[in-house]
Length: 113
Length: 113
Image (cartoon, rainbow over all chains, first blue to last red; front, side, top):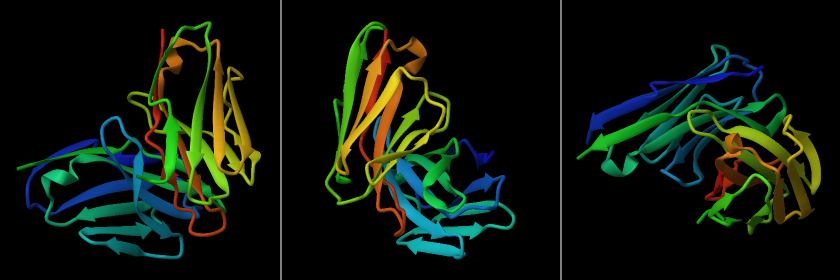
């Protein structure tokens, strides 16, 4: 059974810092990996999707990497801003079905002005 | 606005009530999902519908009954729930066999008394 772990569970940084969120998964037979953002009491917003054949994806200040063989992904946030405060969730797909996701517990990020 | 609309946003029900959650997607997607998000637990996949056909039931109790009348609408019928069923219920949609990125609604916060 696939298990997804995110470290740290919570993180508080001053504005402007670069930071790295970590995600690990136990079964490397994934179709893709997605990073989401969730604001309190709200749904999820997809940030980046990395196919299993890719090593990284970038969107603005966000960069996500994938090392499938070691079961790891990182989300790098450059020049953090208070508006980045949210919970960040990592999810991996099941086998050859890209739409069956197993989620990690999330990292709760607070960026202080 | 993600293109996925859920109603109601909040719901309080007794253990003997029957209620339904509604989800509608305006993205032309062909797959829809129900996820459950409980406090202190990762998101859990409940049901998957591809092209209106249920393709996954993730060992969900029968007191939760999904319905997908067409590719744009998804319902979750609730009856004789337990207090431990209190959670945020999230609907999502995606385009199967493309990049599989999931788009989530804002969720229904359910409290069972």
